[in-house]
Structures are given as C-alpha cells and as structure tokens.
Figure 1 (cartoon, rainbow, N blue to C red):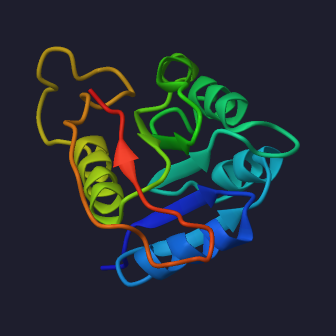
Figure 2: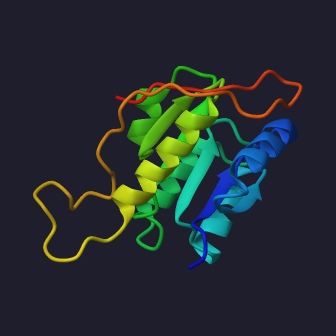
Length: 161
C-alpha cells in the first residue's frame, strides 16, 4: 500500500525544505509554490490531503481552498491551512478543515494530518448523522516538537477547536 499523498502549497523554500524533512518518511509529497499551481495539481492528480499556506502568489491559499471546495471533483479532499496570521475564522469560511498557526510544531502537524486523513476516509455502511459534510469534525488542541531547523526559526502550534 502506498503512503498517503500530500499536496503542499508553500512559497518559502526554507519552509518547504522543513516540511519535506518532517513528512517525507510517512507521506508521498508534492509541492506547489503558488495557488494556481496548487489548484491545478489537485485537479489533475487529486491528493489525499492538501496543506496550504494562506499567503501564496498568483492565488492566495484561502481562494485556492474556496476553489477546491466548490469543485465537485476536489471538494472531499481535506484541506489544512497554516499561516502566521490570526485568520482561523477566515480559513474555516473558505472551507479549510483544519488551521494551524505558525510557528509549526512537528508533532501537532503530523497528528493533524493523520486525523484529517482518518476522518476523510470512506466508512462502510450508512453515514452517521452529521457526516455528510466534506468537513471533518474539529480537531483538538495539541502541543508538539518543532520542525527541523531551517534557519528561519520555524516551529508549530495549533489554533484548532
């Protein structure tokens, strides 16, 4: 069985490298530097999960989130949005299934990814009440270790409910 495929929208090469170092052993990774590329890649090769920085060139991460959630071909792909901005509510309104505030922490990131992947898997039989939505249940708050050093001081914590 192949590892889950993650599509990551991140403009910062240092952060891309930190995410790659953190996630490459558990997941198949693809990166997009801009929002247009992120949406195009998600439509061409639907990943198991999209992770996006809110601030991206050519289409911001929130608009990419809205576009993916409004497309029948991609609306069920869970989306994790992260940024240093306090925009959790805006991310949720755009359709993000989870929001993490930078600096990111490795354990919180990995836990959130696993929770999103688990809640997005099809379940056999009828859906329990309230599970018809493309949005998984809110994730609990958690703490964890920092991502590998990038020279930029990146770490992680969550602003999830």
